Image (cartoon, rainbow, N blue to C red):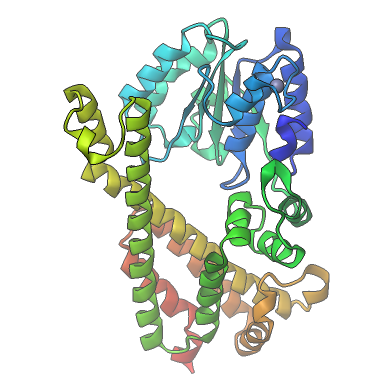
Length: 393
Ligand SMILES: [Zn+2]
């Protein structure tokens, strides 16, 4: 067993990190892990932290390994970047704590889950620390791409690029019973891996939540079926409303969980009878966690993430159409195999230029989405353009 067991693919990266963790005298103290959403950056950062702290360089079984992997090591701090923007005060507090000596382990390790979500002003607070970390401190920064990372950061870190794991690697992992999970049946594991396209988090969701796959199927089938501007508008409205409701529910649940965990850390019972007895400072922090603005920020981010995924799913339909047009079904294989007949029918009813036009429409919608465009408008425009064949015929 080792801390790397839960990492999917990434063989070359693991080799580099294993070497770094086994020769602590030469260990680089500031790292940047770069890889697209869902590829497993945060999991890799945690595994690396465990390997650095472990007397056996990551055996996965000692107390130190288990504490780090469970997120309860006193020497490993993770700055989760769930919020849209990280307040500068949080970054300052992180820098202060990074300067302390480790309490039990070999290193004090600070992991920042997504450095590109930290505003430039707050990032500047980090620069000096990353350039010259405290004697026993290691920084592990993560980011989805190099574009979002300031050059001033890039020049101060050792960059490790994660690759997209293959469908086989992901499926194989799901099928095995690693980390005490139940193995996923082969056909479900294969399908989840294929649809997730290297996004390990998404593959987990597809493999464990039949509703997630069903939602995706409905979306793809609706896109393949919808054939009038009127239907497209209704579909877009329903989709936007559904996503916003899901995101709001998820944000509420996330905030409640954060509040519960905070109370537990403070030694309070989370039943309401005790809340009245909270000290005012604790109460203020508790309320801050549950502030309406906080929920709204989180819901906005989750909404955007969900729409990003919907755009990926929509793009997969036209990718498949292009594959049919190129007669490459056997060579490359369709992503939406379960909707094969409808994909082939769509390929017969639109030209290659039209398929490309739709891929382009999806990129435009993505740019508008990230530019904070009004969601209902962005989606109505997109779905209408995706179903245009019926307007022009
Ligand atoms: Zn260990």
